[in-house]
Length: 47
Image 1 (cartoon, rainbow, N blue to C red):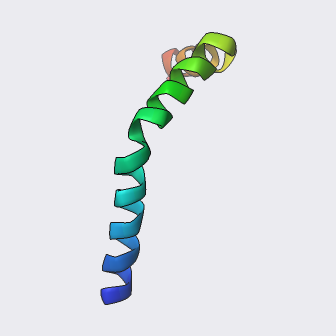
Image 2 (spheres, rainbow, N blue to C red):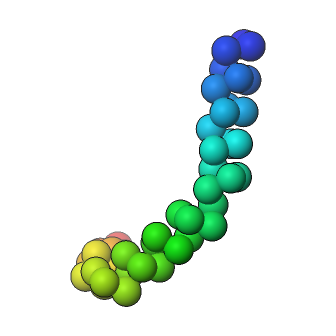
């Protein structure tokens, strides 16, 4: 149990400290490669 708590804390700390960079990267990726988002939207409508 302690190992799982430790790993979860490490992952959450990493995400917390790098969240702004993940957001900036995702916006930059969406600006340069909009095809993937459009593909996901089209697939979602087909459901």
